[in-house]
Amino acid sequence: MLTPVMMASDIALLDDRIRTLSAQSTHAQFLEAELRRECNRLLWDWDDLIYTPPRWLLKGVFLERLAKSTEREYQCYFERESFERSVRPGFWKTVYAGCNAQIEWFLHKEGLGDALDTLGFRQDGYTPVHRVAHTDLPESIGHYLTGIGYLYPDGDGLLVHPNLLWAQEMRHFDAPFLTRDLIRGPYHRVVNGDPMTSEEFWRYWIDLVALSFANLPEHEIPRPEQTGSYGEHLALGRRLVPARYVEKEPRIEPFKWVLP
Image (tube, rainbow, N blue to C red):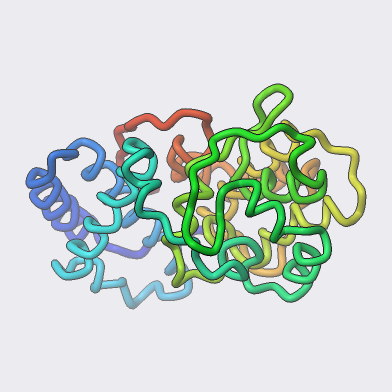
């Protein structure tokens, strides 16, 4: 059972602090919604600590650090050209493989190095590439990167989605966006030769990131046709995932607390 653990009075206090902090930003609407979203998402991660609410959420230093990261994320999705000039490719095993040895070997064997060079991620930094043809990348690499939310299907080509740029900043996670188990889903679909199109891989990503945000238990790797059976997690995740992660163009969204 998915159960958040903070009392209503704590939520009200946290929300007040979020609004006060956001009002100091030139991107106040975005910052308020996204601080609220991220704090709300973290609440659903503590279902095994019913009697120990995560009080550190209420501490100013946590919110200030989160605000700084969220402002940076705004730049990635809404001021892309400026963000691109500062991108320094992150640790590739984390960014592309979730530090999973099977996936690392698969990517190495299939030619991720050359693919990243095509996408502009060279050793001396990032040289922006916004679109490539399907034929510019090995099909296996193109499908896998689409399935983890990095390449957006666009007719006869693939767009470099801002998710791929933002993942370079997320060096303290085992796998950006998806859990280490869920990132194995697209990998298995590719290595098993499933006849999925790029558009189907993207739809699969949309469900996977929703399940990841809703804290799907470890060791669950749903196939595309199975994702709908994870009803409670999928419904919650779809309310928590920001549209900018799953749509072609980013947009600022209001966000209200998702609580029982």
